[in-house]
Length: 232
Image 1 (cartoon, rainbow, N blue to C red):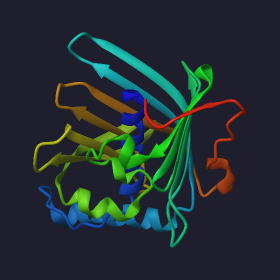
Image 2: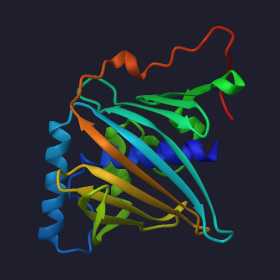
Image 3: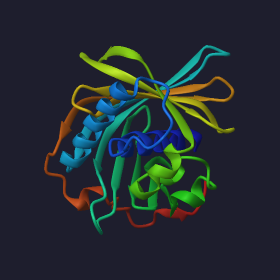
Image 4: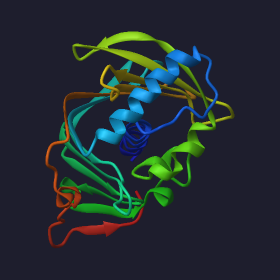
């Protein structure tokens, strides 16, 4: 459950962040940061859909453990009355599927013949950033709770990216969120550090923008007899 929700939170934050406007506190040079955010905003306006391979690494530095998950992600931002949509199909080590359409989501585990159907806010008990998954409208309120700085540049998946670092202004579940923004203005990697020092790194690879993705692709067709629950 924790692994699934961490991935959902980070994905919602990063993919929605491409539409952010510079209205929150920053420590970096205003001109440089404004330029990056403008590029992100332009990328958001031009993006109709996104598809990418996804790699997630959950690291516990205290005991030196690392769990890796792999899968595919598809995303369509909310436009007008159309709700934002997100789907992640884990392929290994276990097969699982997460679908988020607006505030509603389904998390399906075929091995257990079980699916969780609920709302994002109920499933995450109102934790910070949860409502961002597919809900563009709540982004501004979240970012107003964070400071932003430029942490440097780095190469990710063969391309240069600028690292944006968000730090909470008040006590939060996470001490920082780093986002690697490519030259195109889209995120390619991000890192969320928890208060106990554990962190999750998620990378998007072989990203395809504005491919034809039908709305029906985000719906999980559950087999007959699937057990439906409202919490894990």
